[in-house]
Length: 65
Image (cartoon, rainbow, N blue to C red):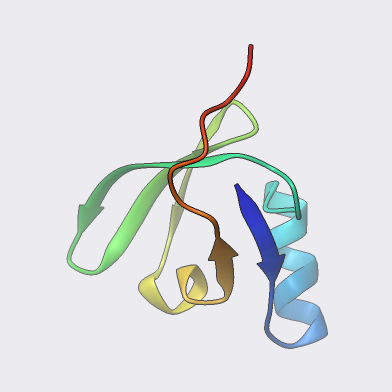
């Protein structure tokens, strides 16, 4: 679960537009050369390691469906 999105306001806005919002669920699908492919809001998104470092997550949270 996403706890917080950090960075400059424009970076936070960009990540939030992609679906990275507090309380949202995110799952890492794969990593390639330091970049990540993640599932967020039923979409697959590729983000850099630098951008991923701005997203604070709580691990081990199971989604209730």
